[in-house]
Amino acid sequence: VIILEGYVVLSSELLAIRQTIPFVGSGTDTVSIIIAAVLMPLAFGYQTGGRFKPGFKSNGKYQSIRGKLIKNLVISLFILIIGLSYLILNLFFYGLIELGITNRLLLTTIYSALFLVFPVYLLGQTIPLISNYFSKEKLSKVTGKILFFSTMGSFLGAVFSTLVLMSTIGVHYTAGLNFVILLGLIVLLSKRKASDKNIMLLGIVICAVYLNSGKTMSLLNIVENNKYNTITFEEIEADGDIQRHLKLNNNSSSMFTRDGRKHAYIEYIEDIAIHPIVDEEMLKKNILVIGAGAFTLGLDDYHNDYDYVDIDGSLQELAEELVLKKPIGENKEFHAVPARAFLTSTNKNYDLIVLDAYLGDLTLPEHLVTQEFFNQIKSKLNNNGAKIANFIVSPNFNDAFSRNLDNTLRSVFPNITRHLIGEQDLWYNEKGLTANAIYSYRHYKDVKLDIYKDNKNRVFYDKPQ
Image (tube, rainbow, N blue to C red; front, side, top):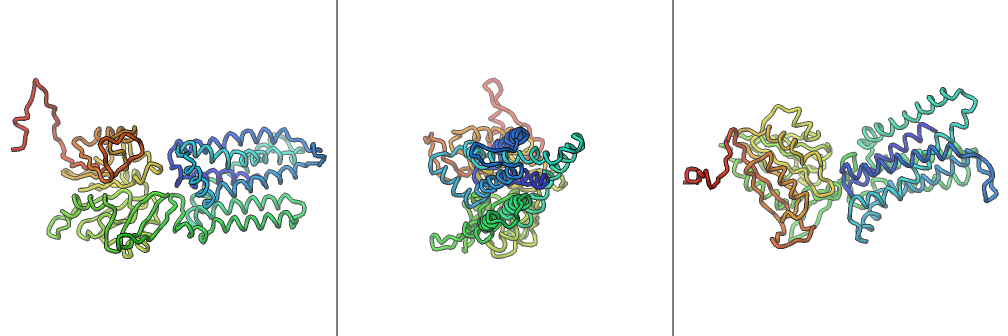
């Protein structure tokens, strides 16, 4: 009982973090709220469970330790079925957004308060309640034994559920397994294993597992749900063409049509950086793309050598099968590793580096917008090499992220240029308007930078002749 309870608590915490990414993002701020919503109720659960005494309640019914344990598990089961089922979460979060609640921290707080705090509080009572059955053993011995099994359960919940289950059976089936384990605990503690109540709970759990099955997920166009992404694929008929859209965590990652059209910013990057170097008579260039998506960038370039880097190893197979309808090409290699780990481990330098891992404001990878990361990128550029980055930002710098990102980029890449693709209005002051901003930089080593002043002005010598 103790080892399975420890597994469910840690696994549910990680599942909550993973399941909410498509709606509130993966920042440390939202993760900290979910962790707090697990740790604090767990502490109060330990205390409450330690104070419980079996006896007759106000309704005249006798409640034993066994009865209290089963009641806690049943309530936790019902709440977690709702809180960890993606289909229900999809309705829940979009319902809140329709009501005007859009702040990601507030959304995370409401979710945690409704679906995590109380079940974890109840599950936290398990250890002190179970300890009543060890009253004849030495306190230090039984304490060590209980903590050992509880920690082992937490270890399995942290490691086995993510590294094994989410990678093999998927996130949603991993959630379904938690429901099965809770049902197993209820049956294990029940005196009558095949009671009417347990049979009814079995039917509910079967429905919950089906609710999280691949067949149900297909209704939402979900083709993959692993520890990194919830991936959806849609085909849309528009402008006399068929558009194939690949979305990662509710953000549009790639678009490819039957006629070979792509997202406007991808076509712009190819126009200025790829098309001029595809001549077979030109020297091959090494190109690094961080954020593979559906591998549409440089798809038709069979001359230069490409390295695509993305943390999700399932992207290539899905892109080739669903979006591109063909292999990506022998001159292209996919590395399913974190971007910074790849940059640290490789000794290779590049003529062109494209940063396209920034899908939207919710799933912005915080570690890929720092000065240190951009310095890593700069160190991997050959002399006369180029860096291009795509960000979704305010075109008028009317929010802190757009301003600070621009400052951070310019602190590393002097003379960087910014080109906007999308809706633009110089006088638009309301927050919310965004556009693709393409930041381009050409790397020249050992170039001295100067500033023109009234006292010392060499513009006459510097200006283009």
